[in-house]
Image 1: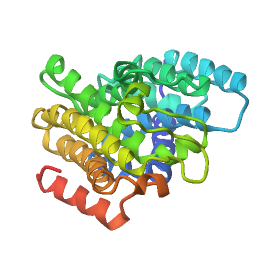
Image 2 (image 1 turned 135 degrees about the horizontal axis):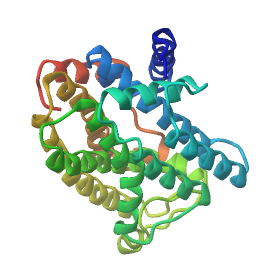
Image 3 (image 1 turned 180 degrees about the vertical axis):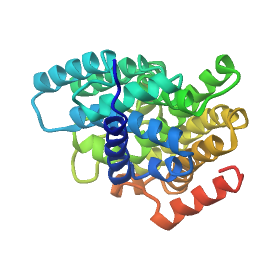
Length: 288
């Protein structure tokens, strides 16, 4: 097969455009990578974003599932001669770096669970979901970053993905609840006496809610401790990228734990200058 370098270049540029415009948190870290790795991680993000957009879109359930099935087939067959620029970039990235494209199967599994409205009875059930939708991205990212010890680094990348997803669940609890999605394990809601409902107040036991959120935040913190052990295993630029992404979410978790009821009022976020500050400190070699 004769590869057109200009076509591959344009494909990466499209992925970088998608990442720049839509990756509100990850783009700060991705910018810290050298060109080849930055382009490869942008390709990973662009396809992951496509999968997420299918799951979060307005299509009927069966249409979403059909589109996800199609996305699964497309990424499995990705090559540099594909008509889709994102698939071209992904295929090229996987040729140049050990990017495990099969991990997208797990991401799609998790998105299918979202579409079907799966709820989680236990934390172990939720953990499986987190590993599908976020641990998979950790392993894909590790393929871009590179490491001398993948057997040790892989589980740490997975753990960091779980930490970020647990943070996402707390950050987005209001939005998810209003859309009929509950990710907090039913056993935890019962244990803390919290009853969620999509009415004006969303939760009728504020003090119990505070205790539940702090319990979940402590759980996420333990996954950060394990996941951040990945950082010393990466080269400096990859370490800065990973530390920046993780640092932004770690800051979010601390803010949510400090004021649990804020998550029920609005989605917790960091300002652009604060995100940039985390990225700058990461590039300077500081831990998040």
